[in-house]
Image (cartoon, rainbow, N blue to C red):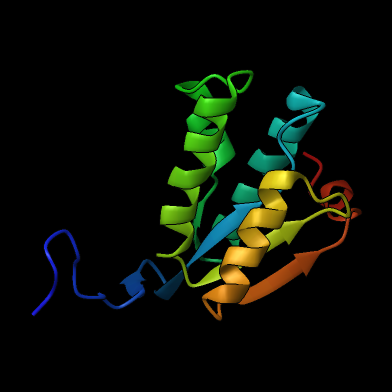
Length: 129
């Protein structure tokens, strides 16, 4: 049987509007130019929705409740994100710069044998409102 606290793996896609939807983890920079990076993360999330995917973008969630300038809280946010990454179908990596958190997410997805898609830095220009 399953260990306490473990849940049997459910199908990772489900039928939504328009058929089967895959879950994607949005991996992009947050630290540095937080205002611009947040705008970009919103664009990437919207792109995933437009592609009929279910996006999870941890840096649009956890910085709302955890302090980015506190190393313990930042590490906790990354750890929480990795939990959700393990439950996604794909990792979508945006841009050419790889932050420390992004590298950790890419390494974790690689260890899991997850499909990783890379989107170059010009993608935000294509997604301008």
